[in-house]
Length: 428
Image (tube, rainbow, N blue to C red):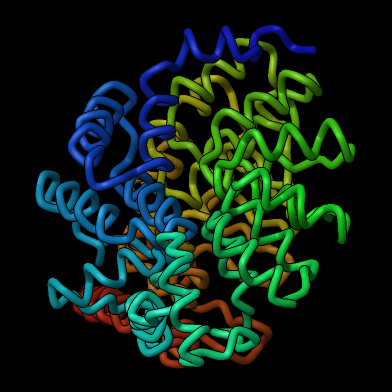
């Protein structure tokens, strides 16, 4: 065991961050103001990038739809207090941020192809809770459900969005409704138990596990929902495990640290530690002995790779100050500069270039950083590369030049920057 990551030490070292996450994932109408104050404190203390805060709020909401209005209120306060512009970032915010984009009339230009699907997702949140029966389940209103059944107003064997009513009861931890449907002949299925680990009601979980066995998806759902007691239960009773990646993507700081504590695998954790956006935590890991070049995930990315991709300039700067390899390639031969082009992380790209990043490197697909800018419509990084006079005449797969790529992907921002460069170059 790695005592540097014991619950006691971590709680003493990062108490404010842990408090914010706990408040975020247990948000109610009464705790929005408290959570927002914790949010502000953490932004100031840990310098967490604003786009990371938006993603944290959004992900917390994704599995807690009954409190959707509370999350809307929290994100609106965040948006108005920090003047956060959703258009700046490429990250795939979920239903909550799409709702705010709709409310404020924001057109997210980088998701034009997905705009219709995104709005459908927003509408789903409202439609599903306008369903009378779902509303009763959300509030565990067994008596109202009983009346609907007695009046033959509903078919208890129906499915809503691919899930039966027992599954919806498990998802929202509504024990009385769950028992009602179960006693009326709706059978427990594998996905019922999987939903129960999101809902977090332990009695529902115990009823389900008498019929079906927990799977890997159960513990993954529990991690994502921050049902940490459910995770510890599955680990102890069924010897199930979760990955650093799952915990990091879910911003489950407690479980991320717990996995280091019980496994001692700091080198496996260092890359994914970047996801939390807390430089102090990355520094704490390295000071505890983690290898700064440790890689994780299917593409074997390092901490610097993720810092570049996720637009964490402060973390990237710190890692380079600790001699992280600025040109290190992942499994697909992408270096940090190429990854900065995926989300137009131009501040990180500028820092990488100033510190010796190779601007002409080629990955396994045959793309350079500038070609990635054309693919991903990254004008900021493109402008930096063009100022360094990188080769603009290279072809991808011997057939497509930069403008071909940009026109194919409708990278209009890139096209504008590139045409300005060409015009200036011709005059010279």
